[in-house]
Length: 302
Image (cartoon, rainbow, N blue to C red):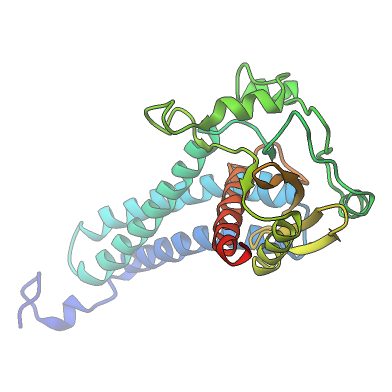
């Protein structure tokens, strides 16, 4: 068998000396740059450092620079590997480094694009005209974990948000949420309004049915129940994210309605300015699940 130098397979499988070591270093650096994000997230969740450092510094500031550096080294390794034979081993390692760095850079770019496209919201609910207020138990739990975001009747986006989201600082969260929601039949594309439309769920059944469905959904999702008060039609729960260990609170209110039962939901993050649409998606998914549960139970109740 003849390799790319014409001297046989032995040369083709050679390490290529320092060029092979450079390619191996590039591959290792690219893998480490990806693992860096997991290290930042897991360290934050385990309490090794605060979320401001884990997310703000390690992930947002240093992470992209590390991936970019790994990509540059990978490209250099490819060029060096092509200079002369033996090429095969060094080139394969270098191309692997380029592939990993390229995918990671694409992921970071997509994350940045999402952060820029979505408004700086971290408090979402179905009815701002009658906001759901947290119980004393939930407020105590939030304070114990160092929650920075207050739960207010009419929260306002901080003025400092104007640096990244011009024109949004100082505006009511309720107004910005409404503008960001995609309403089917009123808009041609959800791209202009990136959030799902939220409104109170009106479904068949009694308050007892609605409460039971809501509690079953919360427990099924594995959220930590902070308050379960069937006599008040109220449920409060907390979801902890897998990465970083961020905590978001979900408040559910069940009330009677002429058509059956009305369910309102509020979801609010304990820390951070923008939730990247997580709270809105959580509320929408919960409402959809409750609608299915109540509509399935309706025939049996009649």
